[in-house]
Amino acid sequence: MKKKVNKSELIRGMIAKNPTAKAPEVLALMKKDGIAVSLPLIYQAMKTNGKPKTPSKGKRGRKPGAAKVAASSSSTNDLFTTMQAFVNEAGNLDKAIEILSVFKK
View 1 (cartoon, rainbow, N blue to C red):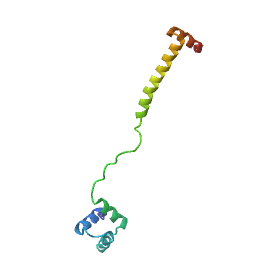
View 2 (cartoon, rainbow, N blue to C red):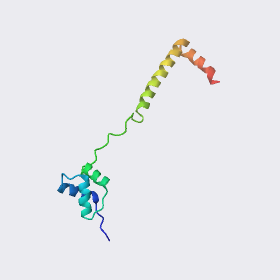
View 3 (spheres, helix red, strand yellow):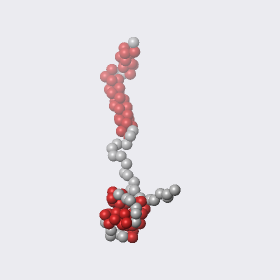
View 4 (spheres, rainbow, N blue to C red):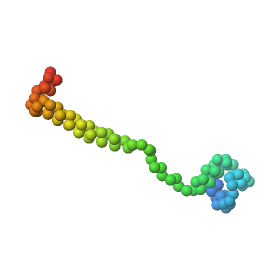
């Protein structure tokens, strides 16, 4: 059973031996050693060169639920202000309740 070869590691090793080598030169050296690799794989290995990925900054845009909290508190304040204006227009709380009792039926 053949042992699997990590081609990226071999490419990085070849680049370490020949730091000034270009991708086509590395491809020729790998073919000379009998290892079949593609040119895009060599470019990818040269680009990362064993460096870890940089963490992504995440998705752009608003955070889920953040706007909902602000909207609900402002809508509660708006509702309270509207109800207070209604009671003031009715004269007092008892008259406002009497007016609202029409909608209860």
